[in-house]
Length: 259
Image (cartoon, rainbow, N blue to C red; front, side, top):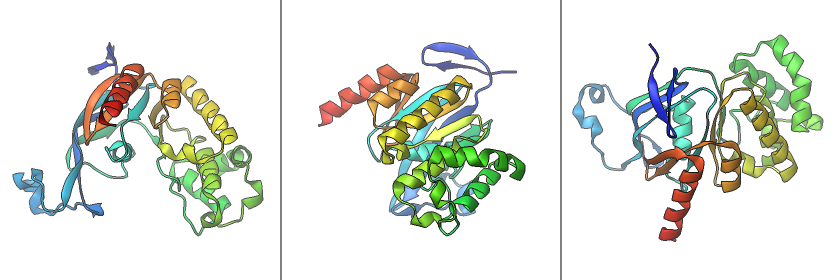
């Protein structure tokens, strides 16, 4: 039996690719709060302990296949934490996050690459961890390197690349993965304009192919370019889930009122 849920004013009957149900996650200052065995069976785990805060709480929404979601909010409001929950890099302390498809995450500048490995080895390692076979990577390798425009640095340790070069190779690999869901944080802001334009063209191509996009950005222009729906986070709460223009307008209104 499929679920019926509400998306930006339209009733849709399909199985969501992402479902977040009353999710919350706590952090301690400078590190993740760790639950002990007693916490699993005690109502006390819902209480804030000294030094803890809720990075996200009571967040619920569903995402249909092929949707393009813009995640909006000031710095420190839970945007990147939400993407990490969807990527299953971290797990909620409350509620549930269910992702019914593979995820290609570009949620931090390293892209999950290993500093001491060469660019070449990182391409094979990262693509392999996401399910590509070695013959598949062999076929895609030249296209990945050509897209990244760093052919002269194939045998250079990843840690010696500039931040812009790291973004190039990370995006080239992640966007080449055949995963239904693409998560993109602010990392593309690091690259030069020419490369960003190429990345944006690739994102549009992926959206046309039916991919689902989670896109975190402070660029109103980029949000309106790619996204049809927005999630506005403030102080770890989801305060608005609506069409992207409505969410951008609400964010701008709130921002200007607090300025």
